[in-house]
Amino acid sequence: MQKAEIKRQLLTKLKQEHCFWSYDSSSINNITDEFLIELVMLHLDLKDINKLFLIYPYKQIKACWIRNLIPQGSYLYTLNKFLAFYYFNAKRPGAYVKAMATRQLNKIST
Image 1 (cartoon, helix red, strand yellow):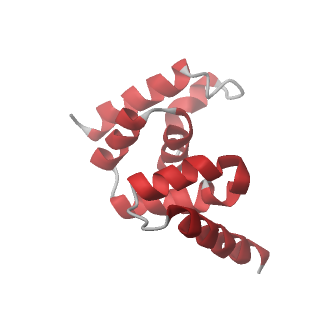
Image 2 (cartoon, rainbow, N blue to C red):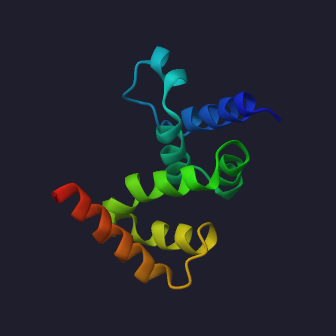
Image 3 (spheres, rainbow, N blue to C red):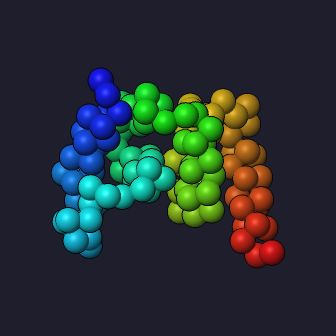
């Protein structure tokens, strides 16, 4: 399956989940790769998250996760802990998520 086809499938699923309720429908197909990765990790299931790894490099997905989901702290702590363990091979997921959150917050505040 080609990258464009997988992206289309993921966008369709995100639309079904009503993730774009506040967006102009004409702009939905033009979202950035980073935003697509973020939304898939937040709203879709493991099968769909796995598709991200077929079309984007591991480093890009991990960087997006650290930049966009990790800083949300306790709101997404359980999800981030799971993602750290399941996808990013963290030996101690809780400690890893807290360390990454601290690092991201320090980047923002400086």
